[in-house]
Image (spheres, protein in one colour):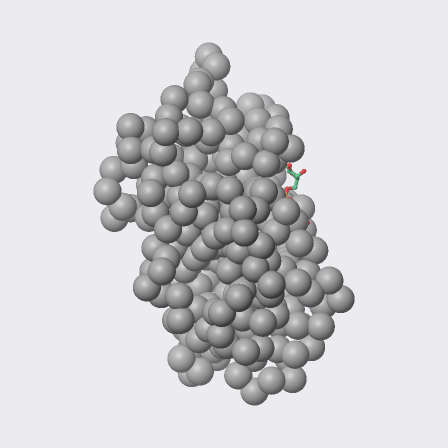
Length: 277
Ligand SMILES: Nc1ncnc2c1ncn2[C@@H]1O[C@H](COP(=O)(O)OP(=O)(O)OP(=O)(O)O)[C@@H](O)[C@H]1O
Ligand SMILES: [Mg+2]
């Protein structure tokens, strides 16, 4: 089971959309995927329609360290979710006041290791105990980065600080994994490659190699918003290329392959029927 946490030290950059769509394409490739909504604002929880709604959600998973009655099923085959059930943000205080609070999620997830190939955790765009717990539970992290040089620099500063602050978690058996940055919402007018190169230069040394920037770039495209409105993974919604622009199917396929390079070739023919071009 591979555990991935989608983080950023800033809000509104595309974390939830990215989490939902990576989960959607991996599930359509036949992998068993568990989404975890670790944002008190439950956007991921309502992203896809549910087939079966569990009685409990993340609070129960963390506090009882038991996976019973916490996993809901979406209407997408192979795609389950632990819903966010903490609108008042009480879980944050519980984690802070509990001796093993920040490693509890990591521990709780060992109970579902046999049931899933991937766990994808969405987080709030702000530093705090719940974000720490989700980062500590992950094998690696993914971060959407706005393609402007100032935001990109802020990304490097914020992310390096987060990784440094969490370094002592290694002594609690929860070493912090590497982070993959994805240039996100790129407009045709900006040169993503130049920004990526600059980011690589700025991030590599201060992060001691922990931050890498992926080659796949996610465009700023209306399909991502429309697919969310239709409660669908974007690769099902936008499957054919229009002129030069790659389809969301091609983009998400390339991203999945780059994130998890050892996956057998993710060819479109291997997709679930609903998602085939
Ligand atoms: N590739 C894209 N192209 C265009 N719009 C996008 C794209 N991805 C996401 N959006 C839109 O950007 C907005 C913010 O996205 P999202 O909710 O995923 O960000 P977030 O990082 O999860 O925000 P928050 O920090 O509030 O949780 C949404 O309205 C979403 O539909
Ligand atoms: Mg979000």
